[in-house]
Length: 405
Image: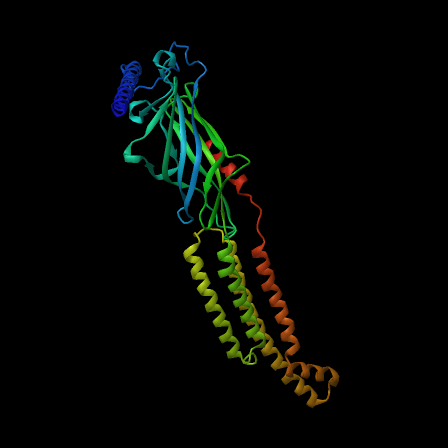
């Protein structure tokens, strides 16, 4: 008996639940008929700039809010960077309004984005934009006041003036641009926002962060019959230099130091052929590093900091070889000349004896020359490791103002 009573109660619950859903669906259908029966997705509600209507005299707003962004890669040679970015787009459609009290308290709707009109907000100065959508569908959320919200997640490659002057300590300021065209500012204006703490992710080589001083820039352009509004999110891309310091800069310094030691204190340091062989060996090692830089750094009119470091190292080695060869020849000539003067016994014997001693022994001169060139070599390393000031923000803002003013 109790089992039959339980089954009866369950059947009543299912019937009530079914009836409840049927009631909800009837209200939902009624609401959809109200909103979309005469709704035309192809017509914008904001064509009111010169019309005799007052509902939009102050203009409306569409906004784009950056939620998260992941840096995928930086292509210095192509002057581009690629990201996976999530934004929330928001606008108001006055045709999509209702009173929740008249529709069983329903205070929001989920609709396919193809069912509603959308302002044309697209990534600008970008290529290869690929939207990410589950099964090729995306929902929008509609509120009773006509507010429409949509989450867009996409992959894109953005253009950016990436400079390698301070490579590998370079800090680049890049803009992620979104634009809305065709609507006048007094009809619909585009605004940009960023959440308080957006989810930002860099790569193993680059840190990725917003420019905290001015993370969002907004500009409107109007000329005759053309109108364009743009929002730019300002990012700072900072290279992590540990790899280049440990595997390129320090090895280059040690190679140069060993070459200098071999030139001035090697077993064949008294032989001109030995000096040339040591110099050529060092030059070949530095040439390998130049090849690595050739494949890694974008070609530009300005030589990068690492390129300057390797170039100056090559110059120091070449000059050291020339100086030691010149000193070697000069010492041999002074030795012969002093021997001739001493034999003649017509000159200052003490002076020529000192010159002869200098010509016979090259230890002091080699020590002096070694410390001079090693000091130059060390100064070159120190200048390489001194991190420059970040002046990219000013240059980026200047370029932005010149482009959009």
